[in-house]
Each structure stands twice: as C-alpha cells, then as structure tokens.
Amino acid sequence: MDGINTLQEAIIYFADYDNCHKLMMQLRWPDGKVQCPRCGADKVTYLAKNRVWKCYARHEKPTFSLKTGTIFEDSPLGLDKWLPALWLVVNCKNGISSCELGRDLGVTQKTAWFMAHRLRFALTDGGFNLLSGEVEADETFIGGKARNMHVSERQRRITGTGGKDKTIVFGALERGGRVRATVVPSRKKQALQTEVKKHVEAGAALYTDALLSYEGLASDYAHQVIDHAIKYADGKVHTNGLENFWSLLKRGISGTYVSVEPFHLFRYLDEQSFRYNNRATKDNPLNDSDRFVLALSQITGKRLTYQRLTGKDLRPEPLMN
Ligand SMILES: [Zn+2]
Image 1 (cartoon, rainbow, N blue to C red):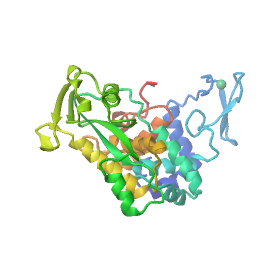
Image 2 (cartoon, rainbow, N blue to C red; image 1 turned 45 degrees about the horizontal axis):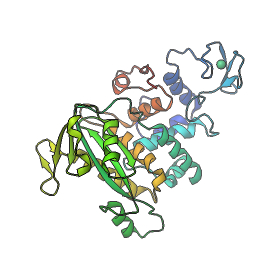
Image 3 (cartoon, rainbow, N blue to C red; image 1 turned 90 degrees about the horizontal axis):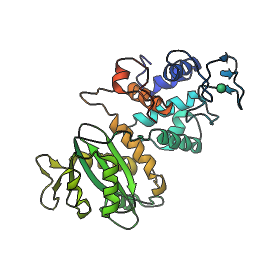
Image 4 (tube, rainbow, N blue to C red; image 1 turned 30 degrees about the horizontal axis):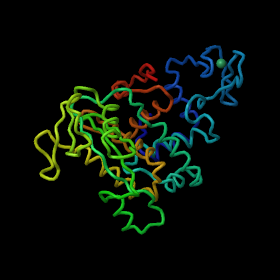
C-alpha cells in the first residue's frame, strides 16, 4: 500500500487484481500458509485461473476465495469494487451518500447503498474493552424521517432539542480514546444507566450533565455533574468531547444523507464512531491509507492495532471474538 494516498490512486491500484490479492493475503494469511476458512485445513491448492483454492477435506463447497469468510463472501462484486468502496467510507469525513459512492465506483445507487450498509456493519466496534479513565456520557436527539422535508425543516428537526419523532442516541467517550454511540429507547434512568454500565469500566471518572437519569451512578463511578443551565465546563467536569462528536455526527447526517430512517441510524453511528476512533491525532498520525488497512483488518476478522500497523508488522492481534 506504499505510495497509495488518495482515492484516485486507490481505485487505480485495486483495479489490478494482483494488488487486491497481495493485500488480502497479507491480512488473512500473513505467513503465506493458506488455510481453508471452512475447516481450517492447510492442505489446499490454488487454482489461479479461477482465483480460488481447493480444500481436500470432504465438506460442502470445497473451494474458497479471498472473499470467503469475510463480509464480501456472498457478494458477486469483486474486490476491485469493495476495496475502493471501503476506502471511501472510512475516509470521507462527513460520510458519503450512496449516489456519490455509486458514481465513484461505477455501480448503481442501489448497489452502492447495499455496499455502504454492509461496510458500516463490518465497522461496528465489537466493544471488547470497556472505556476507562475519564469518560463523558451524554445523549442527543436525531431527527427521524427527513425524507420529503424542506431543507430548513430538516435542519430544525435534526439540530433541535427534542420532539416525539426523534431518535435518542446515547454516547460515551473516553478522553483521548474511543467513543461509543448507540440508539436508546428513552432517556429514562434504566435505559441510560444500562448503557453506561455496558460501556464504562467501574471505577472510571464519569462526567455527565445534570439529567436526573444519571443519578445513582456514584456507587460505581467517580461521577461528577455539570449543570448546563449554569455553565458548560468546570475544570475537568464537562461533556465537550461528546458535544464535538454530536456535531460531527449531525453534520454528516444532515449534509450527506438525504434521509436516515431511525432503523438504519445505528449503522451511521457505527460509521461515524469508526472515523472518530481512527482519526489522526498527534500521538496517532494516521493517514487515509492506514485507516483503510485498519478497517480492512477488522472486516477480515484479523483486527490490527495502530501500533502493529505503523510498525509495518501486519500480523494481526489474536482474535478476540
Ligand atoms: Zn476445508
């Protein structure tokens, strides 16, 4: 992937199947020992003409490809479409619409929509590690059905502060670390505290606003409250990190996506969270190519860490799920 820094370069690079092959091999079987994804056997033969391996163990579907066992498996689209699509999804700061994606890849909008959704699904943070240290928790409203709505009306609904047609999103952000965002059924105590406990390690410093639903968390967390009716920050006690994330999220939704049905919202949350969690920072100067390889490692089930990536050691972390 050296020398591939822009979308245009990525599209040209992946138009050559050998380059797709090389990268997928590096991620899936970095030692070059190909194993059957169905049974784990290493007695396999590569049939170059069909770009598949044949497994000699007796089971159904004895051949497999580079796509087998990944989210690309049952799709007729080639890696030459999937890999640039992934590049686009993870590197467009405010997200990308299926129209743009379709145009860039030369596929129909419907196909692009399907691809983007599948990629977002693959980018879901497994949530293996709880957030710890200093953690902000907050919730926000996202406008529901924005389709067939005048722009100003859509804007009002998406950035407004409440209403019955809105979807409620809960977020937790570890300062200097990761964010998690998820759709919740209500802002009631049980709904929000369940999410806090699901994502935040007991004993962490927890910062929230004065919403009563967060009351009672002090038994598990060093919980401090900022009352937004009075001020927005009191030293470390604020939720500004999440405010920043919400504004990125809303900008993406109102600016890029014509409509986000509540049912699909969680996918957009995952996509925006992935970009946020893999953004370039001073300690973590990721470029588009790095972000793409990290995402691809997640998709192929061989999760790389940034340290591994930048050490140019492409051996994955041990599987955690
Ligand atoms: Zn097999």
